[in-house]
Each structure stands twice: as C-alpha cells, then as structure tokens.
Image 1 (cartoon, rainbow, N blue to C red):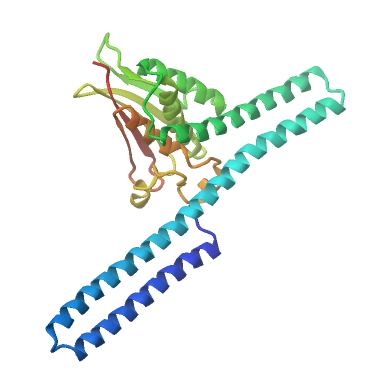
Image 2 (tube, rainbow, N blue to C red; image 1 turned 180 degrees about the horizontal axis):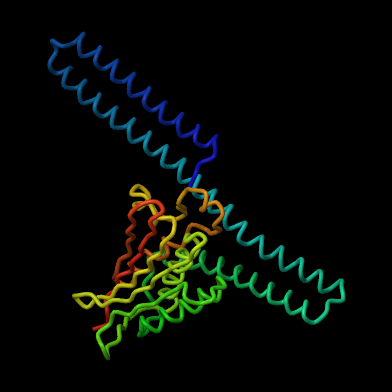
Amino acid sequence: MVLPGHRRRSVALAIVFGILLIAVAVGLNVSWIVVNWRTGLLLVAGVLSFLILIAGLTVNTVFLVREIRRNEQHDAFINAVTHELKTPVASIRLYLQTLQQRDIDPEKRQEFLGTMLADTDRLQSTIDQVLLAGKTGSGRKLTHRSDVDLAELIDDCVTVASRRHGLAGGELEVQNRIPSGESLVVDGEPEELRAAIGNLLDNAVKYSGETIKVLVELEKLSGRRAAIRVTDTGVGITNDELKRVFKRFYRIPGVLSTRVKGTGLGLSIVLSVAKRHGGKAYVESQGKGKGSAFTIELPLKA
C-alpha cells in the first residue's frame, strides 16, 4: 500500500520527533553524568532513568508510527469496500432504469440481465469476504464440520474461477499428486475451505498480467498432511513483501495493484482458515516478475 503524501509526512514527522527527543535525553543524561560522576548512587540512578526514558521514547515512537500506518490501512480498506459495493449497485440501478424507461429488444434485455447478475455476484462476493474475515478473525471454533474431499473441492473452485474471470480453458491447470486409488479428505468447514482456495485462484488470475497461466497442485505430504499449491507466473513478490502479504488490509504496492480491485482481506482469510483447520499457509517467490506460489497445508482426517 502506498501512503498519500500528507500521510507519509505525518509518519516522517513522528519519526523525527522521536529521534529528537531521544537525542535531547541522551545529551541531558550524559551532561548530568559528567557533572555528578563522583556520586556513585546518583550515577546508577541516572543511568537507570536514562535507559527507562530511552526505552519509553522508543516504544512510544514505534507505537505512534504503527498506529498511523494502521489507520492508513483501515482508510484504504474502507475506500476499497465502498468502491466494491457502490460500483455494482450503481451499475444495476442504471440498467434497471434503462429497462424501466425504454423498450428494449429481447436480445439486449438478456444482455442487460446477464450484466446485472454479474454485478450481483460481485456484490455478494464482497459481502461474503467481509463477513468471512470477521468470522475467521473472531477465534470461534469450527461449527459446521464435515468430510471434504480436497480433489473435488479444487475442481469446483477452478470451475467457478474460470467462469468468474471468463477464462476459455487451459489457463487454470490442475495436477493431483495422489497415490492411485486414494483420496485426500479433510475434516473441516467446506465453505471456509472453498473461500480460501477461491481467494488464491482469484489473486493468481488478477496478478498474472496479460498472460494467465496458473497451476493448481494437490499433493500428499508425510505425516498425514496435504498441500494445496497455487502457482502463477505473474508480477511476483519481493522479500520484504513476503512477510506482509498475509496481513489484513495489506495490498502489494505497484502499478498493477492500483488497477486490481479488492478489499485486502483475501490472503488474511486464507491464513486464518488454514490455522482454524490445524494447518498453515505460506508463500514463495523469486522476486518481482518471477511469479509466486501460495501453499495451504492441512491435516488429513485419520
């Protein structure tokens, strides 16, 4: 996420103010120690006070900068959600007004209805993301557990993603690395797992650029675990960003990110869902322009 100019200045001022306070504290305490070096007890008390003061100023500065950045992320999230809600609603309203006020031929009417259905799907997707983020972040236990066949779930998610993004076929490739005659079954909530895999597929398609080539792999690991890996050949992720991509509201800065719409909740949902099912999620990338591979590891049902 790229901070606006005035926000960046606020962060810079907070950092400079903290540094100045620390410098003043160092100067005062050093001067005091030089003047009173003969008094051992006062010297020890002064050193301790100095360390406490420096620690307090450092913590205060770090906290202030963190809060400013957190507020920025919240503002960006609100703006993104507002856009994701307002745009489809405005589009649906416009088409409904057109259908109400004009005589439209049947072919055009079907086109309008198809567009409105796509807009309602987009609206529903945004609402589901926000609700799921609240559910997975609340720490509540899984309530609707059932046996989930990962191979079948992945096939369903790939079908939905292909239809949502208008892919002709071949852009999303699935490879199941499962022993012959064996199925990988997880005890969990199907809708949460579906949302997690769907978010990975959506991100892979959105950040692939002009050429979309996504590989979805299902593999059995040792220790009764399964791995779902989604690999793309898109924009890639730098080492610094690898540590942040799963944070809530975080979006990778860059030209492509400004064109890709979203709420910044997708990957945080992926991580939360994986943890709620006793697993983990992580990402690997060789750097910018070299694609990325997101992996979810889940324990299999005994």
